[in-house]
Image (tube, rainbow, N blue to C red; front, side, top):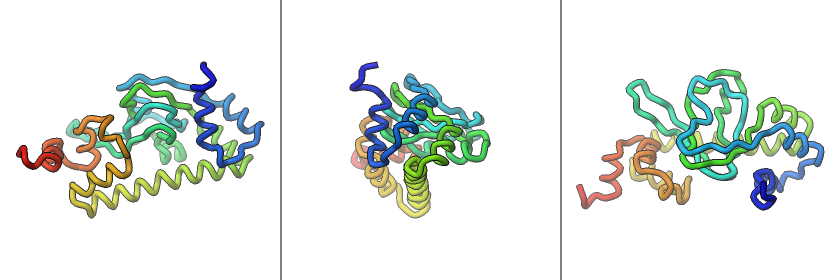
Length: 196
C-alpha cells in the first residue's frame, strides 16, 4: 500500500492531538484490519452481533432502520474521519437494531471492541480519544432527536446541511428526506415550491 495513502497514517493524523505511546500504537495496528467495501455493501446488518467499531478513512455510510412496512429510515451518516458502529450493541453484547451500509466505495479500519477496551485500560490518551468520539456521537443523536420533535421540515433540512456540509451533493434526495422524516415528494415541494 502506498505510504501516502496508508489508512493508518490518516488515522494517526486524526488522533495526533492525543500523544499515543509507540507500543500502544503498534498494538493498535497489529490488532486491527483494513477493509474495503463496495457501495451498497452492508458493513453491519440489523440483528448482527456487533464486536467492532469502524473508522471511515474514505467513503460514506448510512445508518438505517428497516421499518415493518418495508420503508428504510435513515438515522445518521458517517463520513471520512469518523466512526460508525452500533455503540450500545457493541458495549452491551446485543444484536444491532439497525444496519450500516456503504453509500460509496469505502475504506475503513475495523477495530475490535476488546482491543479498544484494552487500550483504554492501559492509556489515558486512548481513553480520552474514545470518550471524545462517543460524546460527539451522543451530542449529534440528542440534537437530531430535538430537531425531529421541535423543528419544522425546512429547518430540519437546514440543520442537515449544517451538520453534514456538502453531503447533499453526494446522496440522493430520498435519503435526505428519510433522514429529516418526510417523504421525497414533500422534500421536493420544500426545495422547489414553484414547481408544485
